[in-house]
Length: 246
Ligand SMILES: C[S@@+](CC[C@H](N)C(=O)[O-])C[C@H]1O[C@@H](n2cnc3c(N)ncnc32)[C@H](O)[C@@H]1O
Image (cartoon, rainbow, N blue to C red; front, side, top):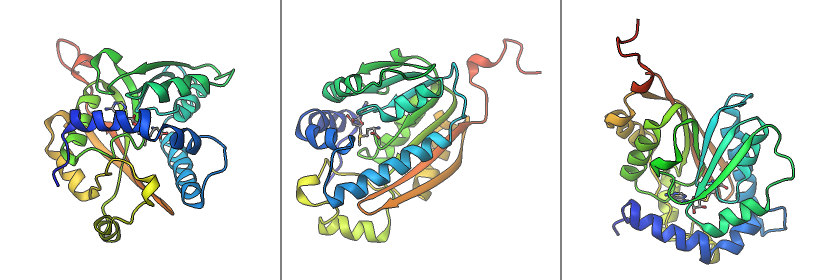
């Protein structure tokens, strides 16, 4: 079955995260008790968030950070606590509303501006860092790389993102339709191989100023996700003085 291209997929995800799964997602991202299956997902997601945050500078004072597909906002809060000026965007108005409600009384020195909309909206501005945790996993590899290229153009530091790794076992489970218990199923996750993704990144002209610096797989029961860091190695054109670099 062909996977929907970016805009169509984004529409499906809006319906899913704004309506179908909003209660389950609110619960998963809270401290409320959950099933054993979901507890493994929660633990894996906590580990993934900690991993992505560990790839950012400890001191984010004044750094502009895009939380791309922020959901209920946990990563945005942690980044703000380290001083970041966070723009947190999600296509689901309900999840953004929940993120606003859950905002702790104090988030330290940083700030968070929430937006409802597409993470690729150029109006969101330029960033030092972009983090897309589990928000690109439902898109095709070609769309992931195109989205990364659009985000990278506006990023001076690093773009951190996750993908669903394609392993032999995962492929078999997908084929058997047994990856998630029926009630937990979301719009299909599109597994990608890291090698294939790296080759696409190398071929993408918009990512020529970036290199893959590291990757890390988090495997926790029903949660399996691969974090990748793309870091800028060539200054953006806007940073090069008219006479060129000396
Ligand atoms: C699996 S959730 C992860 C949420 C959050 N990053 C976290 O880890 O808790 C994926 C989120 O990405 C959002 N999303 C998907 N595509 C998006 C897009 N193109 N622009 C903005 N948000 C998007 C969904 O609405 C959903 O809230």
